[in-house]
Length: 111
Image 1: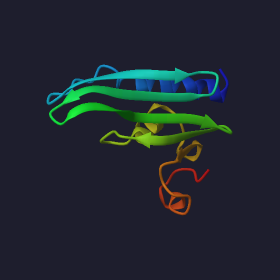
Image 2: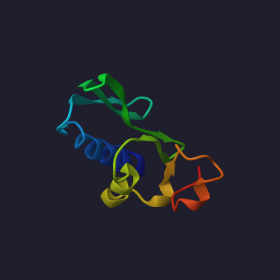
Image 3: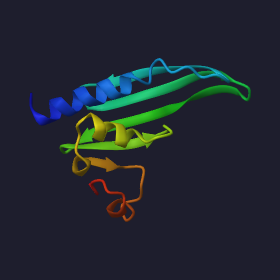
Image 4: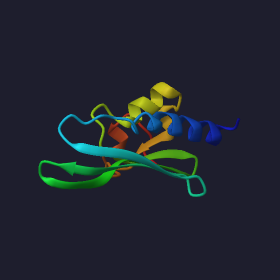
């Protein structure tokens, strides 16, 4: 298995754990939206809470130029840390939600 295929499998496995999360204070469901042709991997949350309708992107990861880009991370502990624990090196993960001049200080790739 080549490097990118390994990364794709790790991303699918890690994100798959977010599909069956139970939310105690709201009726929310998470669904995976994976586009294998463009290497876009999303977990979308939707449902109803005390304040009304909830709909948004919990996690968005893409693979671009051989790097794993975390575009959106709505998790408590940081999805990038989970990807590292699963086998993707920090130097291949870009925290895309940080401004470019902040990225050198994150411990992850800059681009």
